[in-house]
Length: 283
Image (cartoon, rainbow, N blue to C red):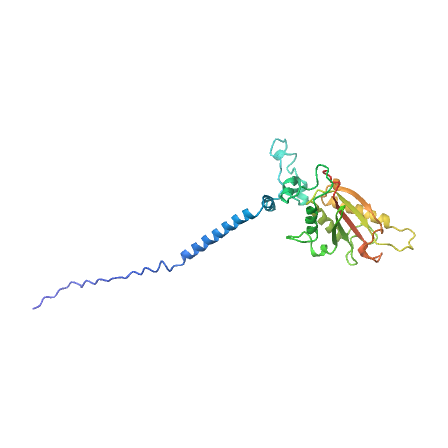
């Protein structure tokens, strides 16, 4: 009789290992894309540093700097935070100008100009007037001027300075008819002028102009009314935060300088605000 073995047969499996799985994965592509992006950002940074001047870089830094009013006093005072009160620059809280107006030298140098000559010069840089003019006309980046306000503003640079003309239309007057009571439009325009005026330190002149009145009137109010409107504009400016010492002149011109060929047109009712080349309050 034959003998039988109960031992199970030994089976050997040979597994072929494929070496291509890791090579065809996608993780390395993500890492490479991140590396290329970082290198591109680095070279762009190096190019910008080489292509810009120190003044331009300073201007960029000032643009992104914090404008929250901070007490510039570093200590030594006998009040809270080294000053006279908790808010030693309290006016900045209400007028929204930030701390730049109190430290104008750095901000002005970053724009490549020095503002009004502190040593008695009588001309502000033309570049500063052009910048202010562009802001008031709503050109450039973020604009302070709404489309509605822009319809009531005309600017021009003259030998005297930058003249900003605020004018009425038939539909939207600056003042209530026959009075010096400002409308909401005039209050908004005054707020705009005050906010924009922080860009320069020049003195300001205010002139009131009105349309002609019928000659049959027994008492023609053109002089009193134009002067009253100019004075009310000064009060509006100061109420919006403009420093009183910047106002150099308030004048009523009656109907002597018309801008519309029709003497009684609403367009002749206007306020002219002049940023003077001379008479700086800090001169």
